Image 1: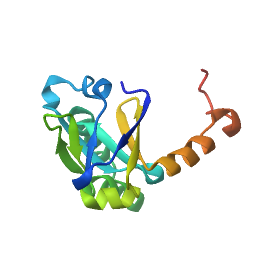
Image 2: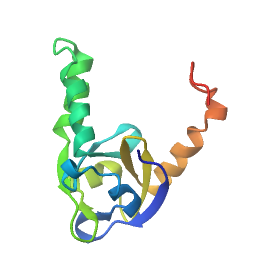
Image 3: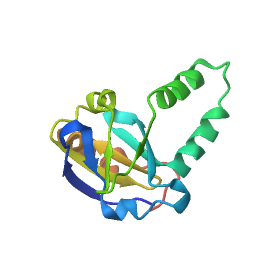
Image 4: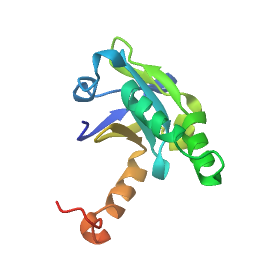
Length: 144
């Protein structure tokens, strides 16, 4: 499980350091590999390989005769890129995904249970303000 929030620099060539705490969350059969794709709300979603396989299994169950299902599967799959940690604990994010998330110099890296999200700092600040559950009225059936 991933939790926490960090701020790192986007290095030249699109490399981003993944916090040690998050790297320790990889299973041996993940082989130091993540899948990065477009996420919701303008961020990038980074899944360990095993978690991405679970996402893929869910998406494969969507009916292909349903337009929303096809579009959702396409959104995640067509933009997914396999990235491997280098010896310094960094991944290289493809340029089309850097552009999508509007990453320039800094990146906010947050853990969200089974995935990691990569955010442009101002976009995350705005999202965080809008995500306050005390202002959203909570989630029906969720008692924390």
